Image 1 (tube, rainbow, N blue to C red):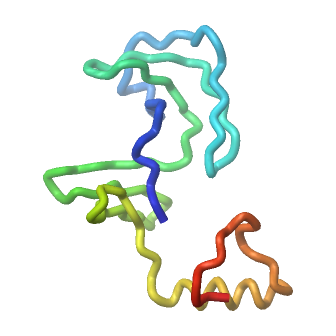
Image 2 (image 1 turned 120 degrees about the horizontal axis):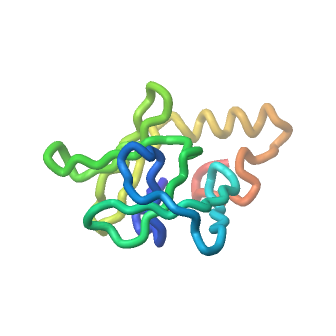
Length: 125
């Protein structure tokens, strides 16, 4: 799984870290893996260009280059680490038994895919 670290918009969840909160000229509709979000607040963060406030963000994402070249998505108490690969993409490698889990779930659901638009992986299912 690849983390899209090449986002074209900068969002902050915490208004405690920003200044100059103001309404945007136009609402911005974001289509994300968590659903549709409408952003209507522009904020200032020293050193950044345009930044928007999204207080309904679902997960916290951190990056600490002193620790390792990786992004960590904090989902409840289970952080998921996306490490940089040789091509410069940040990826999460599923555990070896993950495809067994997917196959079992798909078989028990009358052959329905967990993700209807998923691409078939050679050697699985």
